[in-house]
Image 1 (cartoon, rainbow, N blue to C red):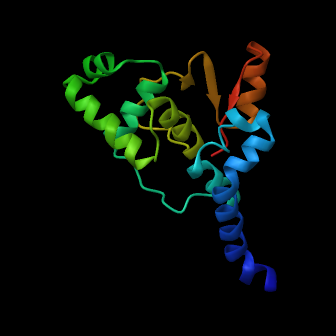
Image 2: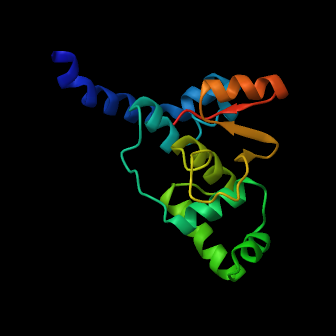
Length: 159
């Protein structure tokens, strides 16, 4: 009972501690310099607190743009596919990055995988098999086992 009552406060303490001492941690452990989780405050807090406090949802159109970006499509290519202007796609991209607390679309794509936007079953059936680059995103172990039989590189997405 005491554990459950103090867990949130302890997680906050750990998150604040890591935020205040991240420079020292990275300087002392140079190999952490490129750690994606350590260098991004949002990810650090999500790992420590076992989830996100701000789970702002993307619109369907933003999700679709993010999925196409994950497939390596440029702003112009996405605009052509969706039959809207590149300026509109740029606006969607900006909103996606703001909502996911990211500075680049690469970070947004990774965040999309982490949150299950990319790789989840979605309404856009024209995506034959969701991918990031040449990696397929697999939803469950049965599908993964079948895919492993075909290829040795598989990206698992646990949603």
